[in-house]
Amino acid sequence: MKRKTGIIILIIGILIVSKFWIGIFTHDEFGGKVVFIKHRPIWKTFFYSPRGMSDLKSSEMSTEKQNEQILFDEFVLENQTIE
Image (cartoon, rainbow, N blue to C red; front, side, top):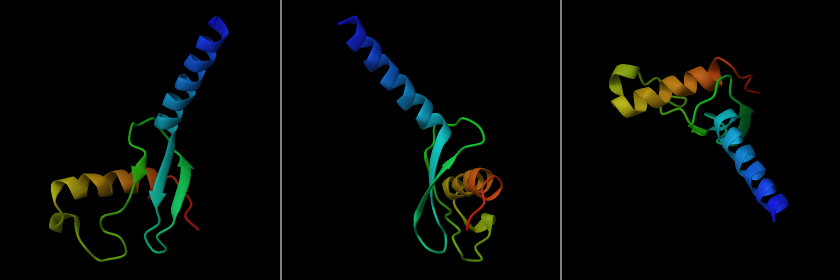
C-alpha cells in the first residue's frame, strides 16, 4: 500500500512540474501546435498570439489580448526558434 501511494505522489509531482516547465503554442502562420520548454516556470501552458500575422498594434488590442501578446513574445518569440 505504501508503494502504491508513493507512486501516485510521484506521478502527481511530475505532472505539476511539467505544468510549470512545458508549454504549447499555436504557430501564427501555419496554425500547428508546438511543444516547448519554458525558460522560467509559469502556470500558463497554452500560448497564442492575438496579433497573429496582422499589423495590429498593441494599443488597438484589449488589455487581455495585450497581456497574452506580451507572454507570447516573452516565451515564444524571444526564447524559441520557430521553424
